[in-house]
Image (cartoon, rainbow, N blue to C red; front, side, top):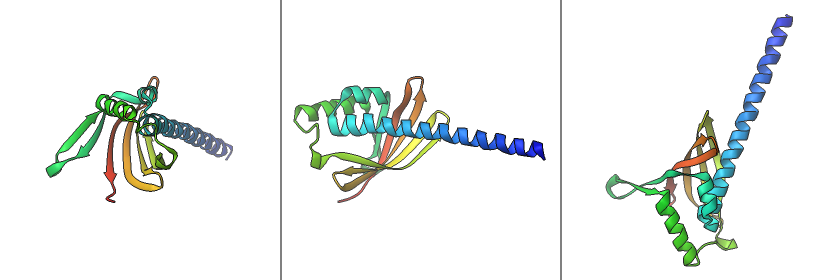
Length: 151
């Protein structure tokens, strides 16, 4: 009976430590998305934040005419961000800020997918799906697909 209690205790400690590690990874993923994507690309136009959290081989993927997939590499997206900054469209003002509401973050080892709602001000515009990998220097966004709500 004592062996059974020890085994149950060991399993409980193992499960709790694994859950805590996963919680830390989920928080790290949310933080890198908030910093690099929400603040860096969308609200501030901060290239340092973008570079810190988005892999240089990142691609935004979308569906074009006749079901064709189009691709926007991060280098081109950063050029667009810099252009928006030059035009005075970034940083955004208070009424126009981008915010996100995380719906799920699924982590398996060094791979993860985050699903979240994307708001402009109070209006829900997209549901984003961002894939990430964990590198030696932390989690990095590697790709994005999305669904756009029609207004």
